Amino acid sequence: MHEYSELDAFETGDMDLEDRQALRRVAGLSTELQDVSEVEYRQLRLERVVLVGVWTSGTAEEADNSLLELKLLAETAGSEVLDGLIQRRQKPDPATYIGSGKALELRDVVESSGADTVICDGELTPGQLRQLEDIVKVKVIDRTALILDIFAQHAKSREGKAQVELAQLSYLLPRLRGWGGNLSRQVGGRAAGGVGIGGRGPGETKIELDRRRIRERMSKLRRQISGMSTSRETMRHRRQRREVPAVAIAGYTNAGKSSLLNRVTGAGVLVEDALFATLDPTVRRARTPEGRLFTIADTVGFVRHLPHQLVEAFRSTLEEVADADLILHVVDGSHPDPEGQLAAVREVFADIDGAAEIPEIVVINKADAADQEVLDRIARRERDSIVVSARTGKGIPALMDLIEERLPRLDHEVHLLVPYERGDLVSRAHKEGEVLSVDHVGDGTILHARVLPSLSQELLRVGKPVERVA
Image 1 (tube, rainbow, N blue to C red):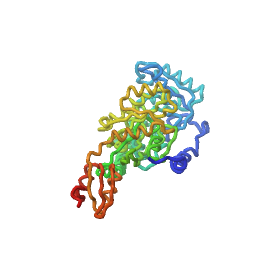
Image 2 (image 1 turned 90 degrees about the vertical axis):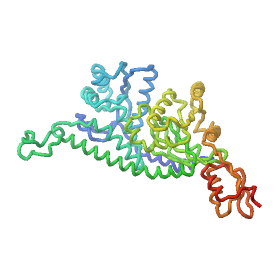
Image 3 (image 1 turned 120 degrees about the vertical axis):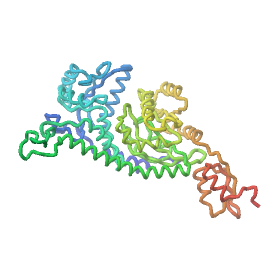
Image 4 (image 1 turned 180 degrees about the vertical axis):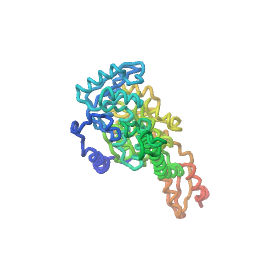
C-alpha cells in the first residue's frame, strides 16, 4: 500500500482545491431586477436566501435534518442562508407548495430579511413555481434546480460538463415560460395573427422555437456523451478481459469517498469538506495485503431525492458501480442521520441495472468524529460493515483484509516452468495474481502462483509442469 504524504496532496488535489477557493462571491453586491421574468434565461444566481420545506411524514427531527441538508446545499452553491421555515401538511399544496396563507407569511419574511431568493425543499411543478413567485415577488428555486446548479459549478471535464448541461436542459424543457407578448406571440396564418402585412411567419411561437432548439441540443449532447464514454468502456473491457477485479466506492456526498481512495491508493484526488466536491470518476490501481492487484473507482456522490435528470445524464459514469465486483458503500458515521444516507444511496442503486446484486461492504467513515453509540448501532444493522477513519487511517488495514476476502478468488494454482522468452506472463502473474514462489533455472522460470482462469490457460499453453522438468 502506497503511503500518502502531505507533499503528494499539495501537488495534486490541494492545488485543485486552492484554485477553486481563489475567488469567492461577495453577498449583496448585485443589481436587483424588479421583475423576476427578466432573469428567466440567466444563469442561476443565489445570494441571500430563505429556505422553506413541507413536512409530510416522519419525525420533526427528520424534517429538520432535511432542511439542514438544504442549507448545506445552498451554501455549497455560494449563497448566504438567512432563515428556514417548515410547514406541516399532509401533502404539498398543488398551487403554491405551502398554501396561499403561508405563502403570504413567507413574503413577509422575505421582505423583512432582505432575501432575494426562496429555495423550496422539493421538486416544484412549473405552476407551483410561477404562482409562488407571483406571491413572494422574488426568484423561487426548488431543490432540483439547486443541485443542478452545484453540479454545473463543479463539473470540470468535457464529459462532466456535457452531462450536467443535458440534465439542466431536461429540467428546463417543461418549465419554459413565455414572458410578455414577444415570446408568446403567434405569427403566420391567413391573417398573420392580426399582425398585418409583413407579419406573416412560420406559424410557430417563440416558446415553441425555444423548445425545439433545446430538444436539438439535448440530442447533440446525448451523441457527444455516448462518444466520450467509449474510451472509458474500452478501458473497462480491457480490465475485464484481463480479469483484474474491480472495486467501486459509492456513497452519500461528503461521506469521505475521495479521502478513502487517497488513503488506500495514494491517488491524491481533490478532497474538500463540501457537497459534490468531485464529479468525474477516478479509477486507480491498488493491491491487497497479499499483493493482489485490483482497481478501485471513486464515483459521484449521491444525495436524498437525487434529481432523476442527473441519474439519467450520469448513467455512463454510474456504470462503474454496475460493473464492479465489490462496492464499498461509504457512510458518514458523524452525520445526524446515517441510516437515511444509506437508504438514499440504495434508492439510486435501484435505478442502476445490476447494482443491487453486487456484494457490498458498508464502510462507516469518520470514526474519529462520530459517537461510538451511533457506530455500534450501524454496525449491528449492517451485516457486512467496518468502522474506519480515512483521515487518521484507523481501520484501513482491516478494510484491506476484508476486500481481499470478498474479491473473486484466484482459484487456479499453477506450478510451471515458463520459458524466459515469455517473461511477460510471469510479470502478469505478479501483477494480477498471487505469486507463491519464483525460481530461475537454466531453461526458464519455475513459477508457483495462484492466478485467474484466463492467465492460467496461457501459462499452461507455454509452460511445462514442474514434475516433467528434467
